[in-house]
Image (cartoon, rainbow, N blue to C red; front, side, top):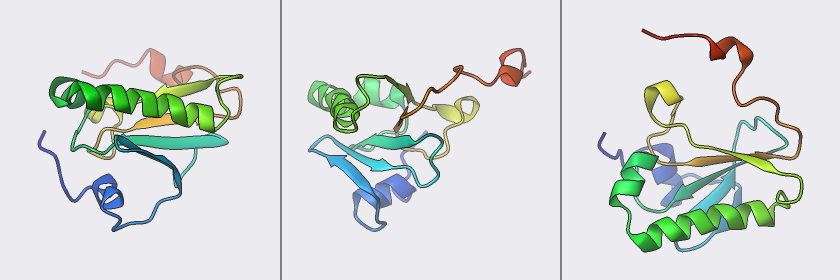
Length: 127
C-alpha cells in the first residue's frame, strides 16, 4: 500500500490539523486520541512516511526504529503508566482494524484493561 500524504496523521505532522500533544522528539509524535477507549489513550506515530509495522520494519533506518521504540517507552514513562502497566496496540491492515494508513501505536492505560479480544470475536472465522 502506498503512503497517502493526505491521511490525518500526515496532516497533524505538518501542523495542518491540531492535536493534544503529549510528547515529541525527532523520531515520533504522541498525542491523545480524540475518541479515547481508556482513561489514558495516546497515539504514538513515527515522523516518517510508513503505512504499517511491516512497512516500517522493512524500510525504516536503524535510527528510526530505535528512536520510535524508545519514544513509545518515553511516552509510557511520562504518563506514569510503568508501575501498574499498560497495553500497546498496533492495528495493521483491514483485518487488523487499521483506520489511518500511517503506522501508529495505541497506548492504553489508567485502568484494568480486560481481555485482549472481546469474547464474541475469539471464535469467529472470516472466510
